[in-house]
Structures are given as C-alpha cells and as structure tokens.
Amino acid sequence: MKYRSSILCKIVNIVILATVCLTIPVGAFAAGTTTLKTSVPSNHTIYLSIDGQGTVVIEGKRYSKSANISINRHNEPFVEIQAAKDYYIRSVTYNQENITHLFNNGEWTMPKIETDVSLSVVFVKDSGNPPTGDTFNLWIMVLLTASMLGLIVCVLNTRNSKLI
Amino acid sequence: MKKFIALVLAMTMVFSMAVVASAESTTTLTTTVPAATYTLNIPADAVVPFGQQYTTLGNITVTDGSGFASGKNVEVTVTYDAFKPDSADISTTIPFSFVITRGAQDQTDATVGAGSGHKASGSTFTFAGKVDGSIAEKELITGYTGSSMTYEYLNAVGIYVASENWGKALAGNYTATITFTAKVVAEQ
Image 1 (cartoon, rainbow over the protein chains, first blue to last red):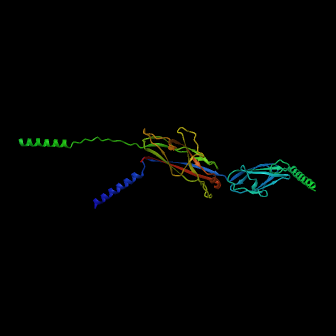
Image 2: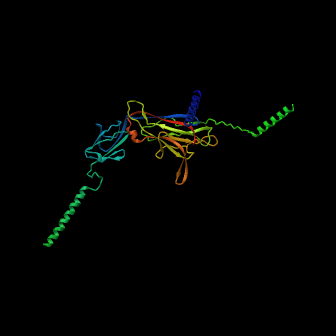
C-alpha cells in the first residue's frame, strides 16, 4: 500500500513539474502602467461673425454684431436670422460650410454641439441687384427685351402691309 | 604457502583484467545560465487634450539587458481599455486605440498620426536578445515591399480617439490605464 502511494506521489509530482515548465516563461515578469487623463468640457463656444446690418437670434438672445457665445454641450441651439431694412442675407456659413440654403424663413436648428463651432452671417444692402451676385442690371434687360419685341412686331407689320 | 601465494597472484590478475575490461572515464561539464535582467521603459503618464485625435505618448524600449542570447527575447504585452469617467454620474466612456509609428532605427522625433498602425489590446512587441548577451533597444519589425525585405523599428507609440467618440462623451473627467507586461521568452 505504502509502495503504491509512493509511486502515485511521483507521478503527480512529474505531472505538476511538466505543467509548470510549460506555463512559466523563462525569466521574471515586469509590469508598468501609463495613466491617461482627459476632460470633456461642459460648455462650448459659438464664434458668431456678423457682417452687414441685421440680427442673429441664438437661443432667444439677439446679436447684431460678432460675439463669442457660450453654449451647453450637446445642446441644439435654435437660430433666427433677420436682415435689417434694405438688407438681405447674402450667406450663412457654419464651420466654413455654406448653409444658406438650409434656412427656412430665416430659421435653422444647429446640430448637436460637441465642440467649438463658428457661424458667419453676411448681410448685404439691397441695391436692386439680384441677390445672386449678378451685376447685370435687371431693368436694362427688361428694356432690351421690350425693344426686341417691338422690333419684331414692326417687321411683321411691314411685311403684312407689303403683302396687302 | 605456495598455494596461498598462487591464489593471491591469480586473484590479482583476475581483478586487474576486470578493471581493464570495464574502464570508463567521464568529463563533467557544468554551466550556469544567468537570470536575464533588463529595464523596461514605458511612456510617462499624460493628459490628453479634449478633441485631439492623435496623441504621441513616447516609445517602448528595453535597455540595460544582460543574460540574453539569440532567441532569448523580451516580449511586452500591451493591454488597455476605454477612458472611464471619474464620476459614477457619467454614463459614457471614450474608446481609443493604441497606435504605433515605425521608421529608421536612428529616428528620434517620431510621432503618431494618420499613417500609424493600430494595435488591439493584448498585442505584443518583441525585443530580440543578441549574441553578446545584450538586448535590442527597439522592436524590429520586418516586412516586404515587393520582393525585398524591409526593416523598420518601433519609434513612437500613442493613442487615437475618433472624433465621434469625443462627440458622444458627456462632460466630465475621464481616466484610462495602459498596462505594459514584460517577460523573458525563449523562441520555440
């Protein structure tokens, strides 16, 4: 009985030794850590730029000149733009992207604020020029069209009278 | 008396012959494998600015190596997890990935950026033991460009935080830990 248990002990020892040899690497472990820290701000800044005469209303507050506006993170501010009398909205740029076409009746909701952003509004005095920026006078075009029509009518009348 | 002397002589002869027949000599060689020692150098703690996508932390190097040999290397495992909020009131985390930059061996001003490689948590870096008993300071990364072999070295490590991950995070302070575990391994 004693002999048997001694053999069993040897077998167990050999198995344990073999297992240890397979899992323990040569040499010792060494470990270190690098700790990283960061802070996510609770407010962001809207860098509002206004060029020309008009007002920009952001979250109910009215601005008629450029300003840096603090806004809560993840807010979606409501923006209203109103040109002054005899002025029109030439362009609205959000983070260097032209978004003039996104305004409906001068109103627009900004996307969720996740970082500092810029909003630039340009008002231009309405001098009768088309808002497309085309410098060709509309009245001259109307006059030229009318003249051409008159000329055509005259030519047709002359032809008709000759035929009679 | 004669019989006794004859017996002694006979025995002497027999024993001497036996010794000659089974003669064996051994040379015993002994050696001591020294414990490999080294210094693992890892990036220092850092503050990551909000919104910054790539942040260079430094490099992983192994110096002051002794007791190494060809095929006896140091393997460094990098494990990490997302930035966790310091306050229990904040429910968001900021995931990031560990990035590396490779280059020439003597490059000292390397940074991580758009061209850096991404390494998942649990990735390993191997620093090769040398014939002279020392160890390579930088990890050597071999590859192929067409049919020719290329040799590049680990020159910078850092982290990459995608812009959308910054965007989703709620306001507050966050902490992340990168763990570097080194061990001496023998090539199989």
